[in-house]
Length: 109
Image (tube, rainbow, N blue to C red; front, side, top):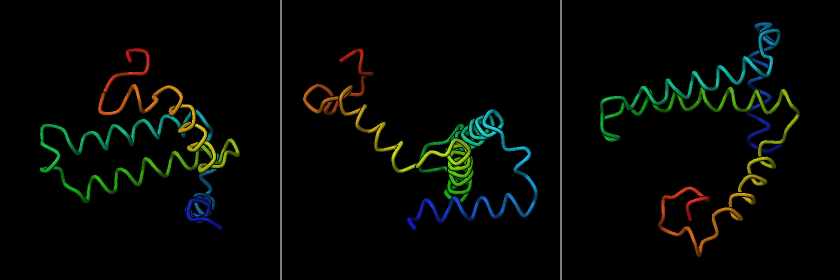
């Protein structure tokens, strides 16, 4: 069992012990993911990156991962596989020869 599977199993155990699966439909998981991402952004609001409270950043990032893993599990997706598939697509959109050191979107390269 890989680390992502271990995390997902721990999240499901935590969820199921509280009977929260009833609230974890894809729409609400996606909403929760977005809200947690906004809370992650809030840790940097009006500060430089160096001024951010790293403990708060870590906690909010964990919340983002939590809802992302739960959403993937809801659809039966393997997190490693979907991330690697997306990276392969991105490699085609952002070839090294055209994008190295350049912060432009693929359609602007």
